Every structure is written in structure tokens, then in C-alpha cells.
Image 1 (cartoon, rainbow, N blue to C red):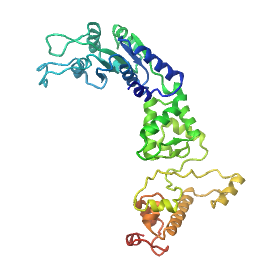
Image 2: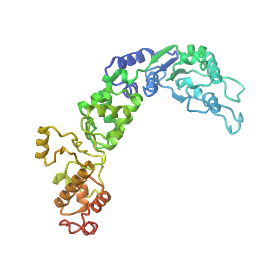
Image 3: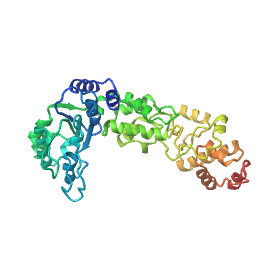
Image 4: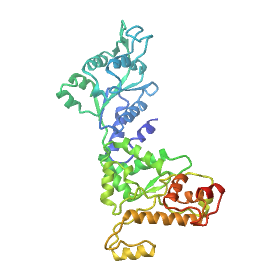
Length: 396
């Protein structure tokens, strides 16, 4: 359990990750209150769970509560419970989170968002180790270990009069700070591999990243920390399942702002997001996909088209590949891309003897999208030798 909890946020060999693992091992066996600080997304709840899992209280409940997520007028009842009839809607007795955590650990997340009146009541609980249910006539003893967390600077909050100094010292017995991901950038490759495997589609190999992409991800500031990295890998896995991703192959619209800036600085050829051209399927792949009407439009993205072709060597290479060089007077990029798209559609139609369904699969397009393009470029029956099923002939 403990290793699983830690692995999600503190994979890696950086000094920051090593320090957190070491502190958890030292602090877990204590019953003293722990205050975890750090930016949002750095894994504070995972640390709290690891502390519980590695403690003598691991057989009891781990009860988390987000103090910022519960309305002020309901938080007291959530924490300490209430008795039947204590307020409108209190139809029965309810046990609070502190009682649920008896013999285990309660995790008070975003403790810095507590109102001042709730801070006073929490201070009493920490001092007396008893709770007073709302509407109750007597206190209830609780045996819990308290782990609190916040992304706020509590010392600054004390200076501003928003947090009680006495409560701060009650909570800050064992301080523990989770480092931001930008402070342990060397752990990024290991985290990428972990989340790629975690989110891999069943039956597919995990996505992988080229060296240039990994370097960009290491240089990115990660304002959302490990949570942001996890979400980004999940996004890539959904759209590019099983693929090798380079910095140039991912459309900029799928990248966070900071990574878009790095992409623009490091990729000399811009991404043409709207051009739906992919590597052609082999005959075997075409046969295997014969019954699939729709394929992932993001799969196997083609390398971006070069825009700066003034170099003579590049001109020769482009001519050898059948692509034109940029003339001195310039050209209409929109018209040129349309010509390329039309030519590729014609080639695909000829290869499939005019079968629209197979042509759509060959170009990695949805069938309806291909039909729109056929109409756009006036590629109707009679323009090409059309064969295949009757429905395709009528559509084409």
C-alpha cells in the first residue's frame, strides 16, 4: 500500500523525491500532527496516505476531507457530527469525520481555508482530543492522528489576520514540504513512463516520447505540477494511443501555453493542424481495417510540411520527393495545400478502385468527411474509375 501511494507522486531519483520518501519513513511511526505544505498538484494527499499506510494506524480508517470544498455552515457538522433535531434537516444522528477516523488518520486538506470561528473549534479538538457534535449534550473522545495540508503560506496568513497563530503551532509539529515538479525536473521522464503505462489503452503499448519532446517537458515550468503532467499524458494517450510522440508531431492546440511557446522556439517547421494527411496503409493494414468505418483522426500524424525552402539542397530534396520548392515570388499556401489534398484523394481513390469506404480508411478520414471533400473537389462518378460496393458508387 505505502509503495503504491508513494509511487504515484514521488517516482524518480531527484534529491526532492528522495527527501520526501526519507521523511515519510521517519515521520510515519510518530503520532504527532503533521503539516504538509506545497503547491497544488504536488501530491500532498498521497503523502498523507503514505504516512497512514506506513504507520501503526494503518489498520484504521484514513478519512480525508477538503475544508475548502464544504460550505461553512455545513463544515462543523461534517467534522464533528450532529444529533437528531440539531437543525432543520437533521433527521437522525450523524457521526462526524473525526469519529469515523477513530483509531486511524484524519486528513484535513486545504486547512488554510478554514474560517476563523472553525479554527477556534478545531484548536479545541487538538487540545482536548474530544469533539462536540452539533446539538449534542456531551463531548465524544476521539483517538486520531491529524495530518493537515495547505498550498497557502500560513505565516503570511497569520500576518494578514486570516489564520490563528496558536492553531498554526498546534498543526506544525512535524512540517513536511512537497517540492514543485519544476524543482525536480529530472524525474519527468520516469513520471511520463509511469503515467503512460497507467493510462495505456487495453491491448495497446504505452505511448512514448522522443528525446526532444522529453527535454521540452523537462524545461516546462509545470504550474499544475504532477497533476498537470498526469492529465497531459492521459490526453495524449487518448488521442495518440500506442504512438511515439515528438515535439513537432503534437498539434499546438493540445499543448499548454508554456509548451506551445517551447514548441514554437524549438520546432523550425510549423504544425498544419487542419491538414488530415497520414502515412498510407499497407495492403495488410487495409485488409485488417476493412470493416472499420471510422478511424482515429489523430493517429499517425504526418510530419509537418516545410515552409522555408530557400536552401538549394532542400529544393533538390523536395523535387526528388515530388513536392514543389517555394518560388521567389511566393505562392498561395491555401491553394497549394488544397492541390496536395486533392491529389492525395485522387491517388487513394485510384488505389481502391473508387471504393469510398476503403479510401476513407486509407486517408484516415471519417467517411462523411471524405464525401464532403469529394463534393468540394468535384470528384464525382465519371471523373475516376469507380468500383466497389453499390452504396459507395452512388455516394461517389
